[in-house]
Image (cartoon, rainbow, N blue to C red; front, side, top):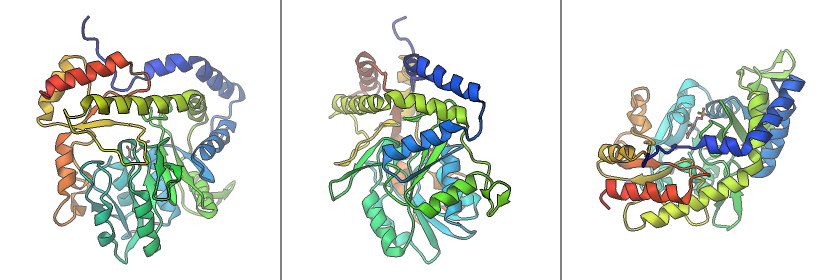
Length: 373
Ligand SMILES: Cc1ncc(COP(=O)(O)O)c(C=O)c1O
């Protein structure tokens, strides 16, 4: 077959490389039988906290749950406003609304697709309780500028880092830090296709605030400060021991995978230079390319041409959140024109640490033909 279908995210080759450590880690859990809050949970939390530099890591049931628990730890009340981006996966705004809060959408920078900080401060009101930027596609948002605005207004910042675990960020001081350790909270996802994924749902909250960390730990287990002492209202939001074991096994080659993702992203950039616009990277920041995204005209035709050549693509996202029926009531006056434009033109390409140079060439060659560049 001349055009075998590529995987959009190749988890099979990764599994083949890690089969031994994954089996070993899972067997250990099956042997000790502590499926809930077993020793792998604390081990993973320690490893991930050390990796990011944050003082605390609290594993939770998913990236969505991480956002929910962080907002609950901040005691978000009905009517409280949270300033966030209009261009993200719905979960970001969903957890605000679920708690009765009001998402206040800000438009995006058309090149990075992250929140446009120049429009952020004007959205802050006396009812604002938090700022929630998203480090979209794997690159941190303008976290220093966001933190400075937050500080001026006495607000906490939750980085929705579901797509950016492993990314580096250097602010104006030139010091490099890890995504998830850039603000009050960092919340990530271990959804299987994420740069660090498990084999089901999982997520984590990072913070260096001892009081907030304790609140998250309690909220994660039904608000218990001690067994059967329910000090606050919480949720059943734990990450399974088996999923923690899988992430621990995957950490064995995570540094290598991140290097590969960076290199493949750089190579895609090089091959596309002068042909097609791609999501921009800011100096001093890496993207871990949870998605490698380009901008095309006539996206349906480009997608059809690529899939005919065995190359799957995806759209992150076809509609900004404020245009989704569930959130349209919160659409800002004047809309979010940049988010609208990006939603029409964005197209994500296959990206995995194991994507060979030949397959990278195949993707770009086919894309150049499909987009007639
Ligand atoms: C930006 C963003 N926020 C939140 C989430 C939710 O994460 P999860 O699927 O682990 O609940 C995702 C996952 O796709 C995401 O991309």
